[in-house]
Image (cartoon, rainbow, N blue to C red; front, side, top):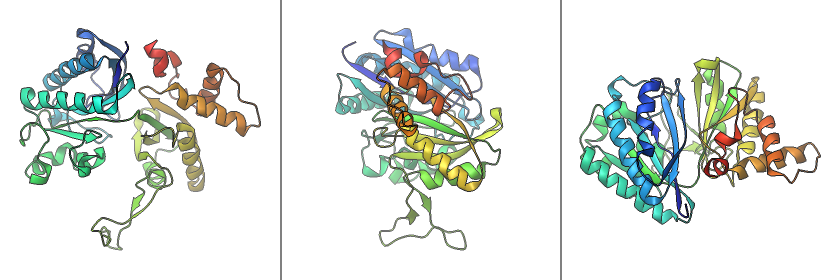
Length: 345
């Protein structure tokens, strides 16, 4: 393929494997698209799906996936650790090869118009596809989550970008956009008490932590916005979550610009904050796919940290990164299934 777009839709189902497979199976039912991976998580009750294809192919696959999720998932019964707004919670388009961000914005809006007209569901655009600055941030759009959506839709400020401003109880709403490559990266904390992960997340994430009064109320600045203590790391979104499956908690992060904050920098920051709190890091995991470059950077970092000349072979650097980041602690990290360049070949 000369023109490649990556799509990473997240669906709000991570426990019913048969249902997940029925939804995922529709992706490759058309031409010009390849399913790369899907990763269910029972605690999050969420599945991250990754596929690539031609611009035309990914839009058609997106239509099929949205329709399948609409038919299969009932949000009235959904509970999980991860924030969510709808059956297909978020659907980003990412330029990979031969396409621009503007191309991806056009694709996002094409899919959004279809979803609003055909499925009659509320659609919001985010990141580069956002129609207003206030809607650029996914977390802002998703505030209140599914449970608060019915009331939110009554507010003229939250009129959907596409579709009716009407609550669809079984589906909720979908957020569609165009963004740079995002790495979903979680660092494991060897404690069942989620307060440590939450504290670390607030300390390192770019948005930092809200300052509150003694009565627990937000404090607002002269600009009318809540006052925050900024976090340590740029281009990092983070929260603390429980992972019952392994009797641990996680600092769950989205690294939205891995050239500025790659996984190894985030890992070292979490490790340092954990030590301050008297808890320990127990490896990490990458959800979905990762660019080879991000792990090559980690391999070089840890080689130099041990006063070794970094090897020239990318595969050797990859092995170092997997070891030092503890990427196989929870489940084996298989490069052929996790590194996007290996998957496209």
